Picture 1 (cartoon, rainbow, N blue to C red):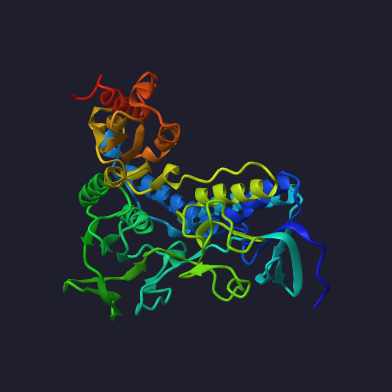
Picture 2 (cartoon, one colour):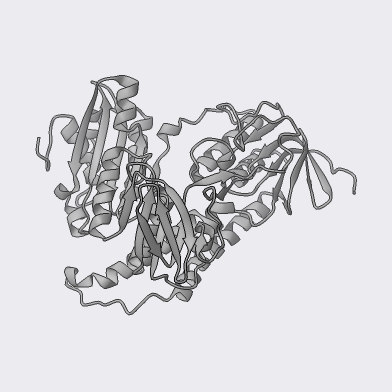
Length: 459
């Protein structure tokens, strides 16, 4: 084994969203950085998560547009889904972004090391027989697709999202275990491809972390799209059959399909990487951190899916930047996780920021709630989408929750983020004139109504 290299300011284990964001920002601030990644820089988000799933969903949207052209006065028909073509399109998007990211890493003069790294001391990571010392170490090893006890993932009949993103065919039918973000996105994309889809969710609603009203609107839309779902009962067994897979629930229901997608969430990648031996405090595989992403070991921080915060790529970016700026001596501001936008990219989309109605009532007691139906929004009618914008405000105070359901509402949540994070009053937002005809008007109209001066809404 060779002698340790000269210490870097920051050694990062994991090149996904959190790790590479920290690397780019730290290098920008003049710190010397070593970035270690066992697979490809970009991690789950770029290669097996956000980017490929949204590409699949866009292909599904094109398929639906072709299928439904007649209702817009355009004579179109869907000849079929070419999965080789879909995958080529998806992979071309990933490839372009991957090359761009590699170029960024190189241009910032970051030492990039490809290989399986392991923490060997509070200030050192070993990879490929080399030891990289750092004044500080950042753990950013991400997450993996979880399964359920007793369910064996074989990659053919019983698959995870990793396998689902590389299917070379359109299955005739699929059962999706888990009605959260991942499950609903795959259900939406596959239904657009013509798959007979059933979602099984143990909790009482789809996207159970969202406001209940959003869940109900999504459920209504999925019923219209003939996406089946079973809520409120857990899986008792999954068995392969001659034709596919049979799923039995604890309530006695049974479902059969060509394949089963296990979409029950993601767990932290932390086992066997030397974290506990270095004295890092852990809980169920997650690395525990304070509001500045600092572990109990002074020289070690952790970010992204490895820590028990929201498992979102943009949260990883924010956490990585926070660590880099803290280590560079800049004032670090803790992240308000309620103020981070959350989107499910199904059709329709679900987007939110701030507190749900239940959380707001628990925190503040009395709150004011207003729901603006997209039926009053011209652009939404042009797009033939339905849904709503729901606002929650503290009694006589700022808006503390924005919840939207409808086609493309994910593009509206950035403005909602500003409203929440800048603690805007409905009257203040109502003074801003939104462009017509856009879906952004729905957010403006909702605030007009909450301010007591509704325009295209019933008072």
